[in-house]
Image (tube, rainbow, N blue to C red; front, side):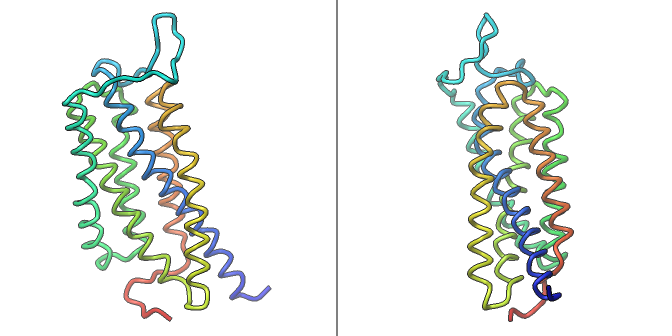
Length: 215
């Protein structure tokens, strides 16, 4: 097997791992935000939809309050500064490190959910930072992926990465809407772990495309 083929395989594996992790975290934060805002402040470390007999109701429907909708609006708006920050940083530190640093900030920002926070304001700030960071990193990955492949492989590489990323989108509801009914802490731990894995994958990517002419 030639060095070029080995390099392409390594590049594909790292890219695929990175892309499904990013999709997992991006859609996961969007889904879990609604689930967390449904909880009373005193139960942010508890579970959702548990009745008096301790039975979990997966099909429960709960109306959101005006405060909940405002919190969701703030977390959605976080994507704007997140993407703008990524646009500014990407040419300063490079594609790989921008992805890794953004994901590390995501991990640090989600850690308060492991400490049983009981403040709606702090919850909004946590989700704001997490969603902003992962949205910016998500866009950087879309910049990096076409750049890292030569012209004759670019469409195939981008398509394969996009296909693999859908696995993250399919898996994340299990965590964001099912595991969260068991424990908010477990949910936060899963997303922190996946984001850490994605940060390592980004740093292990063999090519930095910042400042390089596309072939």
